[in-house]
Amino acid sequence: MLIRRHDPFAPTPSEITDQALFEQRRGLLKAAGMAGLLALPGASALAAKPFGNASKSRFSTDEVPNSFKDISTYNNFYEFGTDKSDPAKYAGKMKTRPWTVSVEGLVRTPKTFAIDDLVSAFALEERIYRLRCVEGWSMVIPWIGFPLAELLKRVEPLGSARFVEFVTLADRQSMPGLAYPALDWPYREGLRLDEALHPLTLMAVGLYGEVLPNQNGAPLRLVVPWKYGFKSAKSIVRIRLTEKQPATAWNTAQPSEYGFYSNVNPNVSHPRWSQASERRLGEFIRRKTLMFNGYGEQVASLYTGMDLRANY
Amino acid sequence: MRTIDFNPTPKQLAGIKATLFLLCLLPLAILIRNGAYQELGANPIEAVIRNLGDWALYFLLIGLAVTPLRRLTGLHWILRLRRMLGLYAFFYAALHVAAYIGIDQFFDWAAIVDDILQRPFITVGFAAFLLLVPLAATSTNAMIRRLGGANWQRLHRLVYPAAILAVLHYFWMVKLDVREPLFFAALLAMLLGVRLWWRWQSGGFRPRRNPCQGQAFPELKPRLSENSTDHPPGRKP
Image (cartoon, rainbow over all chains, first blue to last red; front, side, top):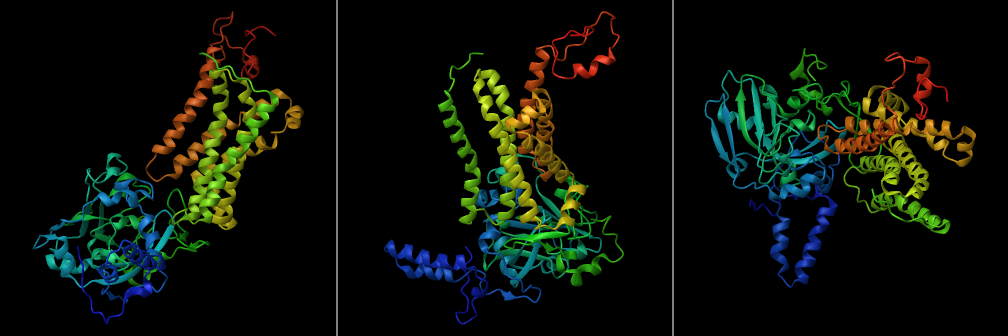
C-alpha cells in the first residue's frame, strides 16, 4: 500500500474532491464511532490521499471533472465483461501487487520495473484531461501520473525505434471477460514513437489523488487525451519499442471501424454512428466534438500532411 | 402435446387483462423510479433509451409467442391478450424513439435525419418502428371490421419484418459483443421458424404437383401465396 505522508501545510486537493466522496469520510467516522473504535486513525488514513501532493499541471483543463463515482462505475474494460458496469463489479479480483512492467524492444537498456519503483521514480502530476470515447460520450478526469516520455528516456530508445506497443494483462483467473473472445487477448495498443514522446501522453497511476481503481486500469495505464479512449490501454505489463507498426486490439477486430491512429475527429464518422457530437456525462445537451478532442494546438503538428480521413 | 384445461369466464378474463395491463407498465414504472432515485448510472440518457428499446423488443417477441404457445398448450383464450401485448410493444417502441429524438438528440432534426439516412442500425430501427405504426393504428375492433379479417391479418404480418428489423437494429448497434443480439435472433428464428414448420406440415409449402408434370400455373401463384392452401392447384375452388 502506498501511503505518502504529505506536508500538512500544503494545499489539499479538496477543491476537486467529489462531494459524494468527501461525505463518505463522515459516514466512515460515524461508523467507526458507533463501532466504538478510535476514530482518529481511520480519519487520517483517508485524509492523506496517497497522491494528494501531486503537482498541478499546465496541461490541465479547467473544465469540471466528473465525479469519482461516474469515472469508476462507467467503464469499458472488456477483460471484465462488455457491460459498462462489469468492470466495477469484477475488477476487484485483479491483483495489482506484485506487478512488473517490462520496457523492452528497440532500446539501449531494457528494464523490468516493479510497479512501486516505477511510481516513485517519477515526479507525479495531476492532469485533468478530457476523455472522448469512440462510442460518443466523454468525461473529464483528474489523472495522476507521469509523462510516458520520462519513462522512455530512461531506457534510451534506439534510432531504429518508430513505434511503441503496449501489452496489457490477460489473466484468466481474475478476468472473467477473457472467456469470451470479443477481442484478441491480450489487449494491445500502439502509438507512433513521436506520439508516445509527446508531453501530453501520460502514464496514469491514480485519479482524484487516489490510487487508480482497478476498473480504470490499475496499476498503470496509458492516457492519450487526443485519441479515442480505447487507445489508452489499461493495466499495462509490457511496453515494447518496435520498428513496425504494432497490431492493435480494436484495429485487428474491426479494421474498417477502428484505425491505428483513432484521433478524435468530428469530421470522420464511425461507419455506424456520427462522431460530430458527444454526450459529456452529467450534461443534458450534446456537445460538439472538437478536433483532436480540443488538443489540436498541441498535437496537430504531429499529423501535418497526413490524410486523416484515410488514417482514421 | 397434452393440453391444459383452463378457460376463463368473461369475468376472469377481465381480471387477467387488467393484471396484465398493469404488469406491462411495470418496466416503465421501474425505469421512472430508478431515474427519480438517480440509479441509472453515469449515463442515464443512454440507460433510458436502451431500456425502452429492450422492452419494445421483449414485447414484440412475447406477442409473437402467443400463437405458438396457444397451439402448444391448447389455451386458445390467450389469443385475446395478444392485442394488448402488441400495443405495449408499440408503446415502448414509441417511447424509445421519442427518447432518442427528445433527450438524446434534443430535437436536432438535421442530425436525426442524418442518422436515419446514414447509420444502418438507426435506419433499420426506424423502419421497424414505422412498420409498427399501421399495426397500432388498426388495432381496434372497428378497424378489423373495416378492413375485413383477411386483409387485416395480411397487414398484421408486417410484425414479422418489424421484428426481424428490430433484432437487426440491435445486432448492428453493438460494438463487438453480439451475444445478446444473437440470443434474440435465435428466439425470433424459433418463433418464426415454428410458424413456417407448421405451415409446411399442413401442406402450405408442399411442391405443387399438377397433372401436367412440372408445368407451372403462374396464374395461380398470387392466390396460393395467400393463406388458403386447401384447394388443390389446377382446380378452381
